[in-house]
Length: 292
Ligand code: CAA
Image: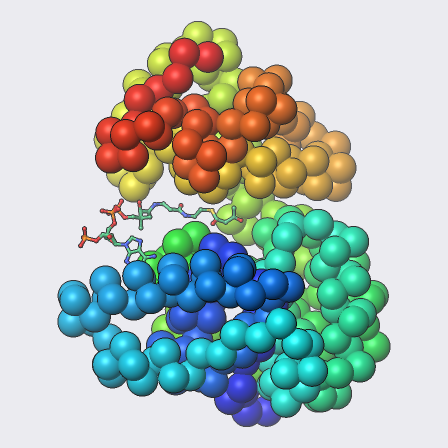
């Protein structure tokens, strides 16, 4: 199976990152969005990122050549000839299932369907199509152009041929794939989410301040970001959603949201994207911990 033409569903943070990486690796990419304004936003983000790489001299080709392989569309029919579809739309099971069902009859029959979901069951998603054996998870990490990992997720229905093709495709994107199975959270979030939630609980218990807990994990363990900086970076709304899916699956306290996380989400403090979370980003280069 040869993958040449890539379709990406959603041009948000993850979708635009995936599209950029695929075009940089030489693939022809079509990105589907519901409205032109979302495409414009995603294309502006890709332009900024590609310019940065170009200035650093890390691209093998001029930005123009990469840009010429990227096409945005609001018409699902433009996905018909894609060899692989990577879905990165809103993290909502019903929305995702509706999207897959709506394109299943449009996209050619032997194309692979992949989801970038971080917590929703791939097995549940594949039930919305007539190609269960051609369905995998391809879970990328934020920021996609910089993070090397892709979790390649196999379900009990995925064929060996499709799984291997998806694994090789991740390699061709310049990423390091890891093999994992369809258990909620896969490898990274199974370990990362309880760690981040424990940081919130440690703060609630008065173990240390937000800044000190962040510095402790950054400087004591060599992590690139402390847990609160990372929570604000991932998005508190996203993390809160993931806790629900994981707690529902495992019924273990370590996956349950601490009250403080819930309060921040209820207040609309989602982290960097809203300018407020565990930190205040009024001065983006000098975030200050909020008094919580
Ligand atoms: N494109 C191109 N360049 C970019 C970029 C992008 N999208 N984002 C940042 N950069 C550049 C910066 O401009 C900077 O360039 P200079 O060196 O020229 O200044 C360089 O990359 C390094 O960035 P920073 O100086 O901002 O900071 P950093 O050295 O800490 O690196 C980081 C940034 C790679 C994000 C690093 O902090 C990191 O690895 N953080 C952890 C991220 C992480 O854990 N992500 C996973 C989250 S979990 C998830 O995504 C999955 C889920 O399911 C929830």
